[in-house]
Length: 445
Image (cartoon, rainbow, N blue to C red):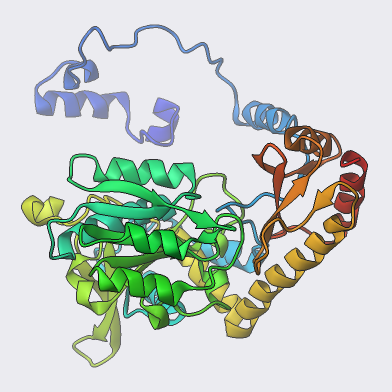
């Protein structure tokens, strides 16, 4: 009888005799003696979860998930669900990738390390910056890491971080958590028609400014048209210019490195992952000047003893496990498997495919806005800007009532104001656009 049969669990592959031998070896009589849990926090009640077989559990989960509403989601605002080719699932689900945690042993991780190297190379090419790490948690933590990097490299006693007033609440909250305990202070600058108000920003930037943050596209889907001027304002104050974006958008927008951006952060999971409702893949790219300050890990390429190309982790600024006092980041793991999927999806699309995907986001958003604008009681888009993927529309009816009525008809949209809704076309099948417009015409009356 093997251990899994003896214990009833495939995760405890040992027999009762083996368990007894291990306990005797460490000098205790019972497993409980290995834990010191205070009585006031110890849970000694029952969980109330009935034991079920695998078949019964799968049936239960299917029934619970089956109660979800089948909605066509026209949702965006930082989370985008493009179609992910099945090829990505088949390749990324290979056991070599799924069982690899962190590639500390390059001699057995060459394939994974090469994929991460290609991921970094993709970001370098798209951003025009020299250095990109091989993944972070998400866009919010990447923004926090950019702020702490700015404090380390900025040669001033200044403490002000400037962000747009439209910054997503979750990103702002994470940024606030990152700077808690430091002298850094997060302040907002105004936006004008969803883009940066340059006059107000010019008044706000001073010698105490450590970092200026902007986004392109903005959270409302507008294209930030004056990035170079924002960069000039930051440069005059010797502040870091940090930009939020993503790989799909960067396929057609100005390269950040060409307009004075020092650091690019954002969410790279627009490729390789469907909409995951919170889980993402933080991207982080910067100028070579900050190489030693990059959070996370860097994969590099070199040669082995036989002159063959070889990959390895060349830089790990997470030093807690070696020299805690020299750590520049508290990122304790990464999203390597998700970065792998992003690299695979990008390679599948190729340069032309990525450009086509981004351009579809421009034309489809423009076409849908024009169709909604033709509905009585609707003005779309609200902002007189170029848009990518999504746009804000004004409705005469209360926005919440419009959204609720659309949900009853099978469509989900964002409510962003009393009379403002936001619509995103990323990942929405073409055949669902006409029914959405028809439903909108019904509820907007």
